[in-house]
Amino acid sequence: MMAYAIETDNLVRKFGELRAVDSVSLKVSEGEIFGLLGPNGAGKTTFISMLVTMRKPTSGSASVNGSDVVREPGKVRQGIGIVFQDPSLDEELTAYENLELHAAMYGVEGSEREKRIGEVMRIVGLEDKLRDIVKTFSGGMRRRLEIARGLLHYPKVLFLDEPTLGLDPQTRNALWGYIRKLKEEHGITIVMTTHYMEEADSLCDRVAIIDHGKIIALGAPEALKSSLGGDTITVMTNEPDRLKKLVEKKGMVECAQPHDGKLTFCVASGEKQIPAVVNLARDSGISITSVSLHRPTLDDVFLHYTGKTIREEGASSMESMRMRRMARLRR
Image 1: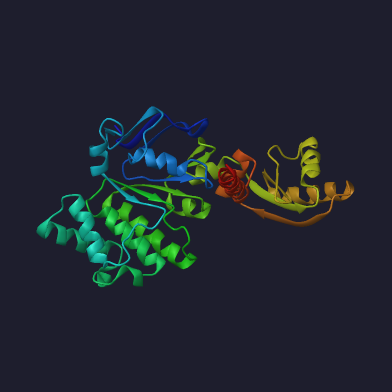
Image 2: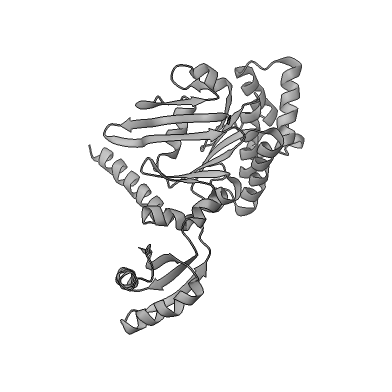
């Protein structure tokens, strides 16, 4: 029988009339790297905050390591580690002092504390920085120290909220390596939120794409990409909506999506379809600037299910947040 680290059933979190998390049901297996994908404002962080007992669900239920998040919050907290999206280290203290404070909070004392601090610092490759002041650390080193702190009390589940946000590509890749090691060498279940599709594709055993608080797609990255079928063609054109109607009318494609001045669709044997699409556009007086062909990505999966790229959706979320702030200021 498969053991689950996390189970939720119709989990809902409302803020007034807004359903930030809308009837989410899922199961995460022990030892799995599970990704929650979506733009800012999609509900990822709110969902995590209920699992780590920072917010109570409006309705539904959730358990972590077999403990109910509402009835047994203390048990839940003892078995989890958290790395928040926003920095939470004391920059004026050394790495050791930050870890020492965390150990005291979890009742890890004496020789056991020294042993664990040494272990987690070796896991993240910072053993030679133990006595250094945190404000001298780079962004990547701080994220690694936050992961070390989250591991200090030997959690069964580690939650990572946008773990590589704001890091340069080289540092992000290095951090990916540490995350993989946590699973492969230590068997820790990892639940991570991200809006970097390539990050989820590279790291996660399964992903859930969240849009407006709902899970709209769930599965292994390869399975989700394969579900689109064949190849992905992206056409840059001055009339994406008109071209969409034409290719659908001709029965050439079934899932064309206009976005960002482009038209993207999935087809079998894409290299054979490109000339037909180009000829159709030319005969209809539609200008095409460029055509690209590639295997489906998680970006294509997100576009297929939402009708928008994650970049468009994220920009829309940020604009909505900005408008809400302005409205509050006018009151």
